[in-house]
Image (cartoon, rainbow, N blue to C red; front, side, top):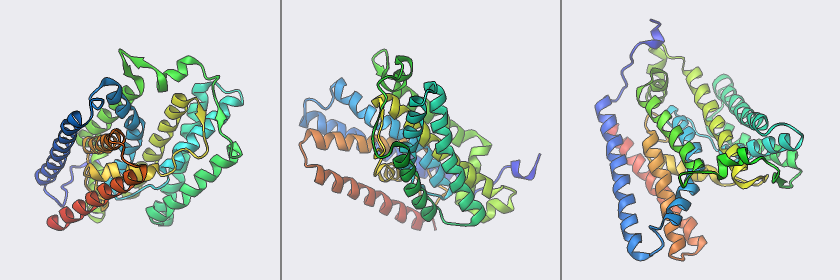
Length: 329
């Protein structure tokens, strides 16, 4: 067995770390249930299947991006480019389809373009030594610029997409949107991998104590590189699903998405300092934001107040993470 494959002990006791995750996830479940109960009395439309389905649709595809962001945050990174990468995947896939490529092949091209952005960011961080913040900020602008260049700033109409392809974004299985099924499957797979798979546990070890992980035989640069590419690749997949859902590719799509994605991951327990987070918590975080948005709409709250409220929720989550980190120190 290679040194890098040997079990590694985190600087923080595993039992304590899991207990903090359970507390965070349990608290989110209680908050979500409390809001749902309150809104069921405040609005007769909140608990209808139509509204529930709309809420799930609103966070299902973004939730795929949140999964990748959570893993990257666990490693100690952050990606401000995910909204632009989602858009780039849409526009590349759409332009390839309009150029005559089969929709599935065009989709592979879009996801590959998104993953390539992750490769470039990963190299900048691991080989050049740039920070995640500056690197992802630069690629946020680059990816958006490429989307504009590909489309010449004009939305691509993709109404000729075949029904079999549109099914991934518009189809249903027994009344449940297929998008939600995709999201649940991806969330479950990565939740199990992050909890059980040795390779994915290295993300936690690296984020908890990069120096100790390096001394334990973990290739820290490879771990960071893999997490970066994975985050961009999942953003690319989300872009393809959005293209199938809307039947178009808009070069301005996804503006501000990165803030909602990061907020959901942090609310779910992912630390901005790395070494902490779970997929279940991230799913609960994105669900909470969706429920809050739906509640505000049903209560006819101004959209300007909605942005302020979401910002306050993010600030509260970051503050909670800060105090938890201080307690663990």
